[in-house]
Image (tube, rainbow over all chains, first blue to last red; front, top):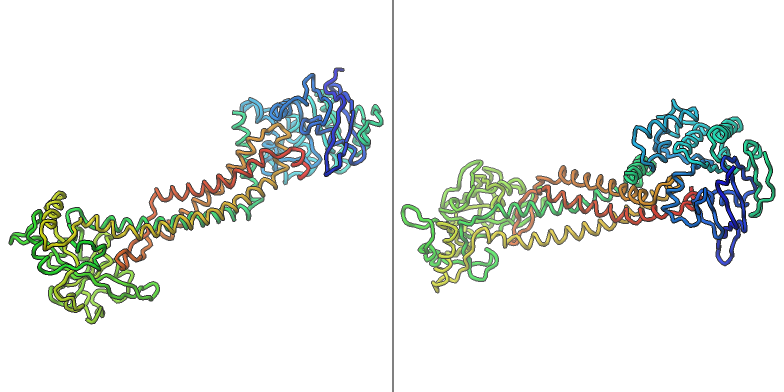
Amino acid sequence: MTALISIQGGAKRFVKGRETITIFDHLDMTIEQGDFIAIMGPSGSGKTTLLNLLGGIDRATAGSISFAGQRLDQMNEGQLSAWRAANVGFIFQFYNLMPALNAARNVELPLLLTSLGAGERKRRVETALKIVGLAERAKHFPREMSGGQQQRVAIARAIVADPRMLLCDEPTGDLDRKTADEILSMLQLLNKEMGKTIIMVTHDPEAARYASRVLHLDKGRFVEQVAA
Amino acid sequence: MRVLNQIIAVTTINLKSLPQRFWLSLSTVVAVTMVVMVLLSFLAMVAGFQRTIDGSGSDNIAILMRDGSQQELNSVVMLDQVRLVGEAPGLVRKPDGNAVMSAELYVIVDGIKRSTGLKSNLPMRGIGLDGAALRDGLAITRGRMFEPGSNEIVVGENLTREFKGFDLGSEIKLGTATWKVVGIFSMKGAVFESEIWGDVTVVQSMFRRGNSFQTIRVRLENDGAIEALRTYVENEPRLKLAVQSEKAFFAGQSSGTIRLVKGAGWPLAIAMAIGALAGALNTMYSSVATRSREIATLRCLGFGGFPSFMATLLESLVLSAIGGGLGALLTFLIFDGFSTSALGDGFTQIVFSFSLTPALVKQGITLAMLVGLIGGFFPALRAARLPIVAAYAQG
């Protein structure tokens, strides 16, 4: 296994009025290519902030973040956008689909950032929807689908551009147990069969059991690292 | 190409989600519609007035008034001066050798507007025997010309349409006398269609003007003949008269009114445009706020800030274009060809029709797009600079 992403001396602090709030400090972590990591911890422990840093949508106050040897902390906004488009798929708790677009158009969005032609984009969208079992719902709009189906569309959107890493923020937080298990099984499959590196923030111990490694974050520090 | 794809995608998302912001978007469209309607109705009024004035008067007809008089009303021309002008060079002459000319008297009478029932000043003109021959394009559309020496009048079509009591065959009291309407005439919408004509000698008598006139109209042999006439008048000490072509005379008569209407139209439209701009800004800021989660999601996926900027700007421009188009359409449907009257520089009513030309529509749409551009620019900047995490948290 080789390190895909590593944080050295990572710190995130906010200034609120006269007070400086430290989310975490001197944080070190390494994530291997092909890992399925669950990050758990109480509210306010910095889980989502860490996920944002790993996804290049927020910047660390100090420390370095590397992805396959590239320093994210040294990239400008444009470079980070291009890096995200090429390497990261996001899966959100509330799916974050575009209500005005049907499933296929939602899935196609990341491909608009590539140089692929319309035909190839269509083919890839069909494949991604087939992987998540929603090929027949391509023309349906988010409002016409259940929460579980919407999250599967979101997963299709996350994998359609074939990124190396998927970042999931409470991906089953809005779903019932049965649907949550289906989604988590799907993520597990993507990790095992397609080699996607998955980092998932969750409150749910049942969800964490699908990961290969669980990191517990509390008051800005990893207090425990256990193999699932 | 990739940036274009992004702009198309984000714009599509914005426009397809417009129903979610229906009432706010509609308010912007309505505000822009009103701005364009106000502007175009004023400009159409000016254009119609201008067209009426431009259609009045000829380069081959000269008007002579007392030197220094700006209006026919304050000019006085005596009979001996009329005779001297008849001997001037450069005038078209009849087989008997007399010049084609008409000494005319111009008085103001009362008329009642059909639309409001209010009194207005109307121009009554006493014309000479050649008066009709000195009006290019004149046609008696109903009835006949008045008989010289009688209390008969003919009335312009525009005036008959706008004012009561001038229907063919009716009798009407003007001044101290009662007059019979024996004919209705048209002159291709020219300013004369807002006048009442009678025999000049009768008008002189009924309005106690003795042998005085106010203007002399003569037909010139050609365009250059006006200089010969002017030289003759300047060298004849008994003729203290100013000479100008009929076309130049009408252009001068209308300039004040046109300036006034234009001067009111643009400031009013701009004041309303500022109000519409505030509405557009509010709508677009609200649009950005309600879409902040979508914008943040797209940024997470790797979309740049520029497509969000362009999409917001395009949304604003689309709303303004709809408003502008609607404004132009409604102005056309309501006002184009609408006939009304306005006070000319001669203190009498000139009847004219609103005229909405393609050039005016272009001005209206340009103003609408300007509102959209400014109203969308700052919200678009906000959309482009939205911090991803903050927007995501807002969602």
